[in-house]
Length: 453
Length: 112
Image (tube, rainbow over all chains, first blue to last red; front, top):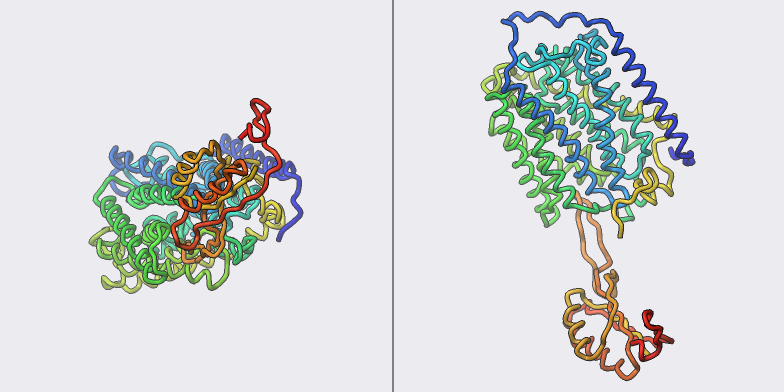
């Protein structure tokens, strides 16, 4: 798994060539692409842009971006050791840059473009060709570009979440290659299946804001990463502790704030549904924080600040697929379960012995599954007329659909990520050398030091 | 000349410093250190994993005084730094070969 460290310039040249070729080809193709087939004609009166809806979704896009940078960046940054903080923050920062460019070239088209066999979108919208100011069928009251931008931020945060699993030991060049491949080959197909016009959507899968597309996918990809890359040096003996919890708590606060864009923004309008999703999101977050706190207090004797933050995030992640489909008490219940269950998952991780450094599996992987299934229980047409009822409202079939959705997402993300990891390891090498890991990513990968004495 | 190093509980620093300056000790060096003797460390927990931190934060005071003052300094430190509970610290006394004031080049007792 670990190689002799190659001279840095070889990596830099290799990565630079790949990126340059990708974007040169992309830009050239974008100039030349033929006009796309016209979007399916609406049967209702021609959609009209609503300024309120547009303003809200634009604002939500910015809120979701803030979840990646600085939210997740600081949340993760504070939890690693001081010698790795810059490297960890840079993972989120550069993924935001990388995915933003991939998305406007081929990512959006693959995920949301005209359907090919229920499996993937075509490249008809390569370079956002045909994606302009007129609305799309996805969101009839906002410009297509606004919907695309909103989705861009989801595509960016998902690979950034995975970085928590391999924190403190991943090569920077491998991180770039892996993230580019992952968003293209795992995120885009899965988004197409569930949100594009893909087969899971046609089956009736309900995922309001990304329980499967974002949390299950990143959570189980994280497990693959932890298993393939192996544990950090000193695992079990050294003190692998957070170096700046205030930074992490700040990040958690930003994540909660941004999540209103993530979930309430997914209503794609400034509407009663957005309010309902906002309420469910906030309630689950609060319940999750209390629940993890109680679980930890009872189990270990003291409630920790990191525990409160983690519980809030568990609640938020778990309610994500359900936010626009369930009522207040369902959201409350979901948050309570999420806090306690994810706490349990994290404790259990210690017993299973895999080194998911920042608990992506326990919080996003487990939370995502619980949330997708809870959607199948608690969804109600009363909350959202476009929804199907869940099991508790007389429609057990939906629970079955959600079960399949969760299962497919877990397997696809886990197996797909395994394959990508092997590929990246074979080409660039995944893990830093032992002495580089000892010195820390900041010095070994970036020749920078976060804190001068 | 003697060098006196005292490892004390951090919150006692002001008291010790004031008492020493009253005694006629005109300079000292203070550093933040970690260590342990018989005092146990503490536990920290992050996401369900417990860590035992054995090192306890302490403050180290270093002063250099003439032989005549040395015993008084030790007594003073004991008096002001003591709380009676485990972890009060230790004092190390050693002989010093020389002292020089950088600005003037003075050495020996005149440099103190």
